[in-house]
Length: 147
Image 1 (cartoon, helix red, strand yellow):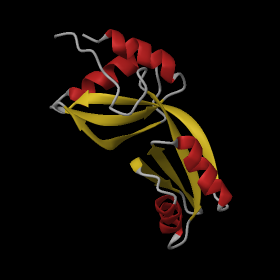
Image 2 (cartoon, helix red, strand yellow):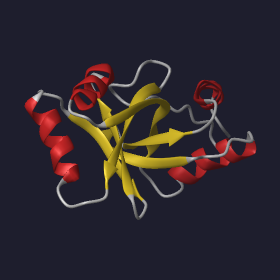
Image 3 (cartoon, one colour):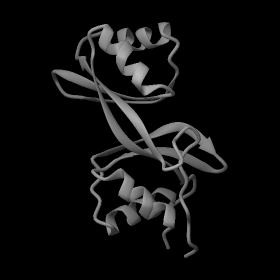
């Protein structure tokens, strides 16, 4: 199999690491809209989002151009917002593209806490977000390429 070098998505730092903002939302109608309206009014564009929920609350995960400002704006309006470093990666948009990345991750002993796709497509690749314990170390492994 040919060696494949993975690259960060456009907008990610050269090392593929980005700051994700996790916002805890009360599980009731309209809470998501409240958060997105606050960001809209502040002129903050969403590059990616993911929602996970439990019976009591939801977790809105956001990637924006300015994560510090995003967290500040949300906190000023009473939302609980936390920062997490995640790996943003371009994965080949073809059968087996994601599987090859997951194989490298598994073979190197990384556990994926969660992952989600983002709306970034570059040159036949799809953007993905990966949350692992040591994203810097995983990035070093992936950028070296996989067989």
